[in-house]
Amino acid sequence: MTHADSSVPGDEQKDAHRRGRRSVVALWLAGVALVLAALLFPLFRQPAFFVVLALAVLTAVAALVLGIRSRAPLRDSATSGWALGLGIAALALDVVLIGAIAIGVLARPQLTQVEVRAQGGPSFTVAFADDAQSYTEDWSVNGWKRFTTTRTSTEIAVTTPAGKTVAPVSCQILWNGTVVVDEKSDSGSVTCRYDAH
Image 1 (tube, rainbow, N blue to C red):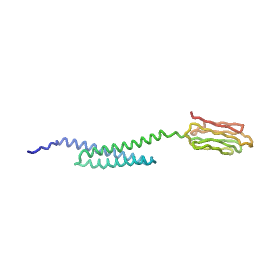
Image 2 (cartoon, rainbow, N blue to C red; image 1 turned 60 degrees about the vertical axis):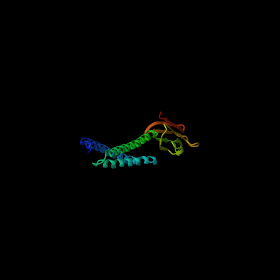
Image 3 (tube, one colour; image 1 turned 90 degrees about the vertical axis):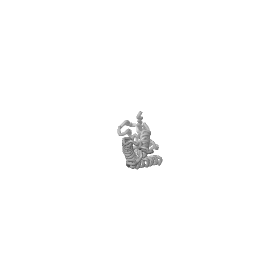
C-alpha cells in the first residue's frame, strides 16, 4: 500500500510566500535596530546601558543572519519566525534605550543662564551664589560673572568697603540674556534680587 503525498502545491506556495514576507520584515527590523543602536551608542556613558545596547546589537545581528538563511528555498518556516521575533526584540531594546534617554532629559532640571553685573566707585565688594557655592569678591569699577543654575532665583549684593569713599553703586541681573533687575543707589550699597516665579 502506498501513501499519497498529502502536501498540496498551493499550500507550499503560501508557506513559502509567508516565510518570504516574514524574512523581509525581519531583515528590515534588524536593519533599523542596528542603525538605531549605532545612533544611540555615543549618547550613553553608564555600563548598564552599554549592556542593553550590546544585547540589542547581538539580537539584531542574529535576526539578520536568520532572516538571510530563512530566504533559502529549503528552510522551514520556524527560521523566519525566529528571525522575525529577534528583529522585534532588537527593536524593542532600542526603544527601551530611547525611553531611558527621554526620561533622563525630562527628569533633568532646567538650566538657566545667569549673569550678575555691578558697577561702583574705584572698588566694591559683591556677594552672590551659584548652585555650587557662595562668592564674596572685590571688583573694581565694574564687573560681571556668568553661571548656570537650576534654581529659580538669584541675588547679588554690592557694598562699598568700610573706610572707602561712598560712591554710587548699581547692579543688574540678566536671566537667560534678558535684564530682569537693574538697581542703583547713592548710599554705597545695593542689592538685586530676582525670582522667576
